Length: 299
Image (cartoon, rainbow, N blue to C red; front, top):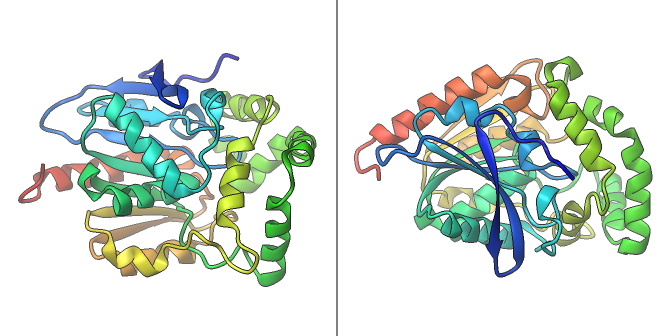
């Protein structure tokens, strides 16, 4: 299956012990700047979808890497690793394979959860965090009834889950309308890739494993809120005020609890700030990274 490769990116298959991993690389690596590692979201996302604009926008003076996580995109031959902790360890192994010792971790939604786990589990590998509507910051999925139904859904075996997912994914364009505030803000290439990915074989298997590991019977098992005070790197958060997938209140609370954090709330934008408001995202992120690089003791 041919997958979307963003402008300014090249596709590589990197061999790890677990199997072949799809990695997008680009930018202009410079010893004076921090490289960035981009971590996509859940559902049937992949690196080309989430980071369609980001290689051209961020790669002018730094190296850029984006990985398809196990069970997603072009890394479906690798068995899903489950929750955000093992995913974070996997991202670090990819960084090792790419020769990146320290980077700014940039994650959207589920990828934000993974990025937070990289910062907590591997602080020596994390120069900064950029989080877009991050997961991992809530006690439950909605109210108690909604959460319980989500937990039941996460328990379904693959022989039932995958056929149900295929039926649901026939309506992937309608799903996009729930993710973003205005579908017209998405490039046609992104919409087409989202639809193709959703209708592919074993679509959603990686996200299914993530949900199985993170949705407990009465609460989410990946809520990092009690540990946010441990984040020791500068952090920039983005959240669309019209986000229907992740409550903006989660990011507001995180910005108060992380010692060195700032939140950019974006009006009339949904879940994908980096795609719905790409110019704002790029400008704020470039300014943030430049400030991190210029701070005393930056390395």
